[in-house]
Length: 349
Ligand SMILES: CNc1ncnc2c1ncn2[C@@H]1O[C@H](COP(=O)(O)O)[C@@H](O)[C@H]1O
Image 1 (cartoon, rainbow, N blue to C red):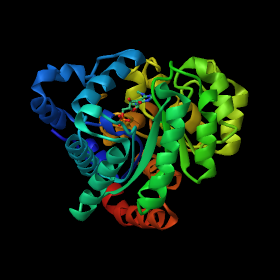
Image 2: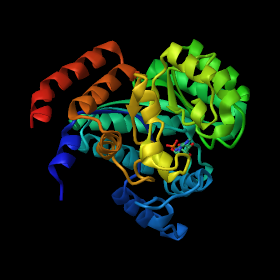
Image 3: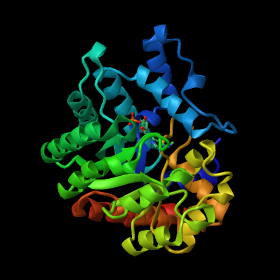
């Protein structure tokens, strides 16, 4: 049953800036995918990490491989993307930046171009159907695939940035942080930056990425995903922290994901408090709402209860996220307006 507190967090208008499409597939959609492909013998326990369960980060990446087997046709992508957009809208998200890695699948005829076109089609269909959410798309580079694929992906993103009526706004760098070194990807990221794609880079998700993070900050990125090990208390450095603060690069923070993936030992030890206390721009996000069995409203509630945030502080946090989005100025103004209209109803109940 939904309590009054649950209702507050669901009604709170929210901005989601860090959501990997295939990590966001809900239980219900997963059931449909599994039923479509019974020969794969995939069970739901292989695609989601439930409450109280933990996995290593490596095991999390195995989960994505399983999901990718289930989502390998245009039809699957359209269904998954539409469902994910509707679910975020039902959770009170008013602006969503989805990200996904274009894949080609020889056996189904899927190409990377078709992949992106299908996600964009899902965004357009949701808009036409009147789903109350503004959606933009970031094309993702999986670091595992190396520098050549990264460069190809940047070119694909450039093409779509020019031809998608503003739906493609940037580039994400993600994938298993244990694999590869960012220095090899720098030329591709630099090219993306030069072509005005906004950059959201996963950085310092594990302790060994200090040097890579220093390098990425020379670009610099427009937003940082996770940044778990940037600060000196966990093996980062003052120099990294100072640069991030001077450049004022917002952090996308995903509490449940980090605790379930065991890069953070417990909620109260989450680096949200380090950055928030210093007044640094922080955005609460879900990462992979399907895999980690969460929702954005739940993440806000978790942050508020763990770190003692007042409803007013929660409101400010959600409203400030508008500024850190890659939406054009006119959309940001519309969203600000929405927040003003909704404020009395949500804050004064
Ligand atoms: C848990 N923390 C994480 N760290 C890094 N990359 C992650 C991630 N969670 C998800 N991804 C990235 O997103 C892909 C799945 O969605 P898409 O197929 O692109 O839609 C994963 O394969 C990985 O590359």
